[in-house]
Amino acid sequence: MSACYLLLTWLILQLGFVFVKSLWYNSVSLEPVECSVAALYALLGLLVGAVLNLAADRLPQRDSIRSLAQCPHCQGEWALVDNVSLLALLLRRGRCPHCGAPHPWRRPILELVTALTFAFYWLRYGPSVQLVLITLYTCILFLVFVIDLEHRLILRVVIFPAIGIAILGSLVYPGLGVRRALLGGAFSFLFFFAIVVFGRLAFGRTAMGGGDANLAAFIGLITGFPEVILAILIAVLLGGLVSLILILGRVKKLKSYIPYGVFLIAGGLAVLVLGEELLSWYFGLY
Image (cartoon, rainbow, N blue to C red; front, top):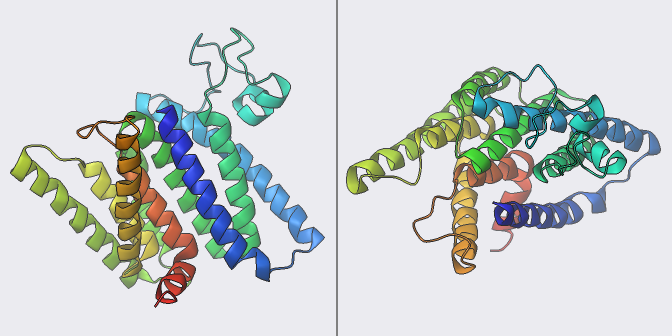
């Protein structure tokens, strides 16, 4: 599991560096006020990341997220500062105040990625409806990513409300529209549902579950049709590449389960945020 986190984090950072540097930063000059507001939005992202960590710990166990986080080792309740693992890393060396056990590395990684993502979104979209919706969609996808990677679950308590939010959001999301959103959701759901059914009928098992089809529906709703096809293509290529690396590195075996939802999320986020740039880059190769 640690190897999966390191590999996926490395891939995300490399892709983010290449695209942000080549497609955006070289053409945008930042004002001090804009940077300050982006920093405040990043701070909000840090706090949201702490909430996502709490939800990722509690929801798979069907526990409430209304109370503060607990140490996974001694079950002692953490103080408010310990719930933000990056702060705990600075102030307490990232250790539980009760038993001294270290915080799981997932917690500060998720908080840092969420904070940087929030800052990037503010600088890219500014104060807008698109900013609010894309931030909300990304938080949902981050939560599903972590839970699927750690528990092999795509929870209906998360994804069904997310689908409802995406349908409502398509009414006001710039350049999307309800028709394209619904077509994208229906196409991606039926595509993956057909894979699930075929796998069960032909082989008696399948590498995907119904949760992957539900997640695909959500991604189709937020990216629209035909952009969702590109998201699926990226997911397939990335999933195949990572699976090959893990198998060759003997981290996984040929028949080992690899959570496919994380690659769907990577493809969906890539198209949601960088869809136009990706298409321009692809067609520019010819």
